[in-house]
Image 1 (cartoon, one colour):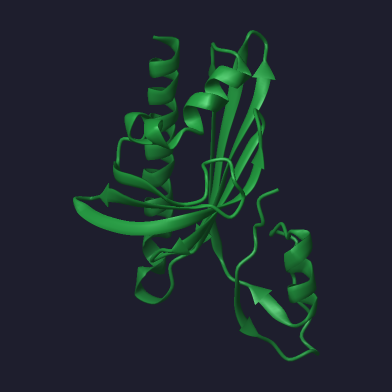
Image 2 (tube, helix red, strand yellow):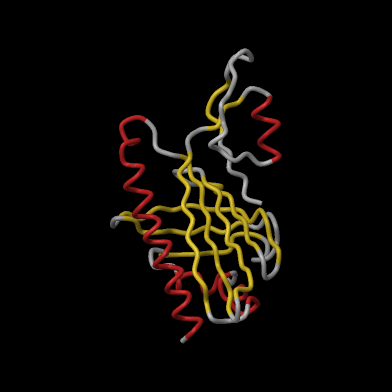
Length: 184
């Protein structure tokens, strides 16, 4: 399951942390109890139903060769190590956001054929974790995209709601593109 925790600073042990609004994965819970606090995160979640069987949708969306076809802002996508279905494999990619090229890499952290893909940023300006979940929905497949990223800090914190809306719109467009390709 996607770990929804990023830690920013160590707190004195006498400070009680209120984290009811955050979801903490099992591995992160130990770090939290050891005195680390969760940083703010931006969460984006979008779903779509595609009128194709789960295995066809999963095969298409998990294949790196198809990534640029359904991700509108993806400029480059390269498998750096391992195989696309191998936990620990690393891919590098470039996206264009507001006309600016951003290079990054991510690691495959979870893989369950026809059900789930999990990724974590390796080299990126913003730390994130993202997941794609696939489930049968009637005669089709429900695809859910979930991403949690470190929220902005300092002067740029004010932009987080705007960035999140723009990113959610982009994610929605990418899922709709995958639907169009797969149903076409």
